[in-house]
Image (tube, rainbow, N blue to C red; front, side, top):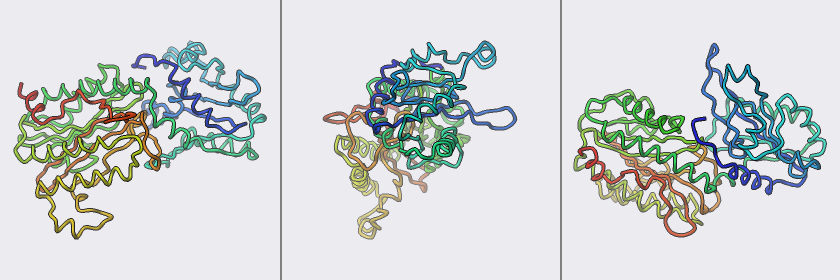
Length: 430
């Protein structure tokens, strides 16, 4: 891995939190992701399942974590099953975790090789009354592709039909949504790497540069700072492309007079950052571009103050809508007649600001969390209002990553990344 070893106290704490939430007599199982094929002998680079990583720090394929806090054998209350490494594997694929390294990574002393799993698991299930199975219950998840976890669930239900089944997802969503200090430090590092990439661009961008050249500058800076690369597919949208919310082609020329919307973020140690900034191709905003830019910035600055403990996200988004409505009136994009005649289910402001303002962020860019419960201190959210005007070939979105505090305004993990229009112009022209 490119990242430095993570303090295993993070994973010990996470497992403790999960096991405290389990029913008596239950065990839980978490599987690594598959390595997904492309064609021939090509594969997609491995990405670890975020749940097993959160609970163990194990970042390799063919790994299984079993938690059984009521096991009669104390050694079997936390178990890691790993693919056995040997000299041949080390030569062809590189270093894999040994049992000793697994302990240093996860803080789990009981480690077996994977070929022992079924034998030991049957012994554990004979003692357990129920099992927590780990399904992907993210509201936006695409679950068409069968995962290693899915195959395991099919096998368990067939082999152990008398056991009660419980869901891990609600526990994981609650635990993962509130970040440990170690996690916040990792996320801060991801944001710091993103800052370096963005500042590199302010000196690089000029009329005639291609969107993909900007992408190349970013990936260079990210990787040289121990990131695997982008936390999500980058959006580098110049001119009218910025009005396409998920524009990812990044293949157009950046033209004099246009604004580039950059929705990009580095990952670090599997933790995401999520930044959006808008910069003028020629280093100067027009008066109209700056008016729209500053309107979005005012909405963002006001909106993020609402991210305090006790806030319900549904109400938060309504309040942000009111802020945006006022700004759109000031810009002349909507008028009082539009507001009077609006559909309450799709207010007038939605014509120019059609997406949500905030989402959970952490191990996933759109991280797991419980949307129907009040937000808590330690949760991390994006704040990303935008105004999109296709008829003007202009889209402005601004986004930072914010940690909810016990009291007061949230802590901005991107506080040092330039955001004021005047500051961006100054740096680009220095």
